[in-house]
Length: 307
Picture 1 (cartoon, rainbow, N blue to C red):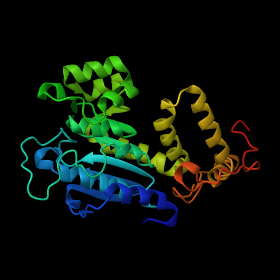
Picture 2 (cartoon, rainbow, N blue to C red):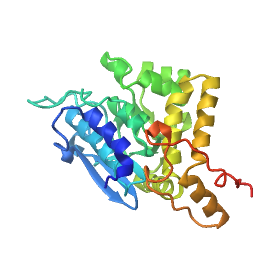
Picture 3 (cartoon, one colour):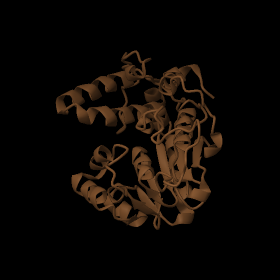
């Protein structure tokens, strides 16, 4: 459950939610389960192959924020109930009174990229349109070899939604992005791996196991503060230009020298044992989180990995 060390995460949650009063109003639309320090979030409209509606998107964002603030969670998997992951917006759905639009209009639809813990899409089936966008916002993608992917927008008279004109070139470059966006062609999970858009393509029955193996490594062997800060760097430093990016990374490196996570990482290496890092917010902190002190601990930095 949330601790004092996660106040920066909870502030983000509160600011994004604003005055809207449906916190966990639709928990059944995105299920939440934690085991072995891994949170599994499951889109839960299986009869519609988990096609997206505003209320489900909002429930998903709430679950991401719940996982970020949970000390028992070190990594997050997002998958779909039944045979689909998310084939895009539910074009047949008629919103009722009080239903949210899509995008949900309350929480910025880029929010998944700001989640400080590692996120993994376990893509078990169709992934298209808005679902394609949501998958690209996560840190890792494990897909079924036979899952079908398409951006779909150009065939519906739409544009590159969910920031895909920015996201896709960041991941695979302009040429592949142009191909997938303009043609709207259907691509298998196997080809997505060849293109570099998913990390691994595995048989459908192995998708969750492969995602859990990756999540378990991230949750149990890697510093939460290091991962959160690297995610932060990946978002901001490419936009800075080389000189400022080097300055930024040098400043963050100096802050890391003061951290408990560096001490634990070095000692676990020297003692030839698994590392036991503190939960996010309770180990090393950084100024970008709003609670780092930027001090330097020379003793923690005195050992190198080559020793």
